[in-house]
Amino acid sequence: MTETLNPVAAERIFTEAHTAYRFTGEPVSDDELTRVYELAKFTPTAMNSQPLRITFVRTEEARQKLLPLLSEGNRAKAASAPVVAILAADTDFHEHLPHLNPQTAAARDQLAGNVKHREAMARNNAWLQAGAFIMAVRATGLDAGPMAGFDTAGVDEAFFAGTPLRSFLVVNVGHAAPDGTFPRNPRLAFDEAVTLI
Ligand SMILES: Cc1cc2nc3c(=O)[nH]c(=O)nc-3n(C[C@H](O)[C@H](O)[C@H](O)COP(=O)(O)O)c2cc1C
Image (tube, rainbow, N blue to C red; front, side):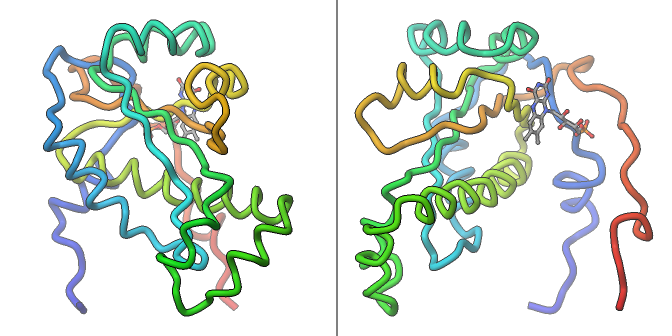
C-alpha cells in the first residue's frame, strides 16, 4: 500500500475534476450508483458509525417533489441531472453500533442518552462521508454537483417525515455537459492553508 495514486486517476478525482452545473442526457445506471456507494462506504468515520444515508432521486414524481424545495438558483441545475442524491445524517445511527463496532458495545447505550452529542456526531461524520461520496462519484466516471442551497426542513418533511434522517446536502450526479462547469477559482496555496511545526 505504498504506491501513490496513478496520475490519471488523481486528475480525474482531484486536479482536473470540476463541480458540474449542467448535465448531458446520458443516463446513470443502477450499477454505477452501486459502484459509487461501494467506494464511498469505506470512508473512515468515528466509531465506524457511518451515519450517511443517501436517497437517489430519479423518478419524475420524486424530482418534482424536490425541485421546489431547492433555492431558485439551484433548480435548473438539479433539473438537468439524471440523478439527484439527497444526503442525510441518520441521527439514530447509534442503533447500528453493536453490529458496526462490536468492540465498543457500550457506545450504543451511552449515545442513546445523549441526543445532543449524537446529533453532532451524526452531522460531522455524515459530512465527512459526503466529501468522499463526491470523490466516489468522480472515481466512477461521473460528475458531481454538490448544493447546500435548499430548504432542509422542507426536504425532511417531504422525504423523511417520521424518521431520524436530517438532510444536509444534495448532489447532482451525471455526465457534465461541455459547458456545464465554471472556470476554476483559486485554491489556497500550501503556505496559506498549512502550518508545519
Ligand atoms: C458543501 C457545498 C455546498 C455547495 N452549495 C452550492 C449551491 O447551493 N449552489 C451552487 O450552485 N453550488 C454550490 N456548491 C458548488 C461550489 O461552489 C463549488 O464546488 C466550488 O466553487 C468549487 O468549484 P470547482 O469544483 O469547479 O473548482 C457547493 C459545494 C459544496 C462542496
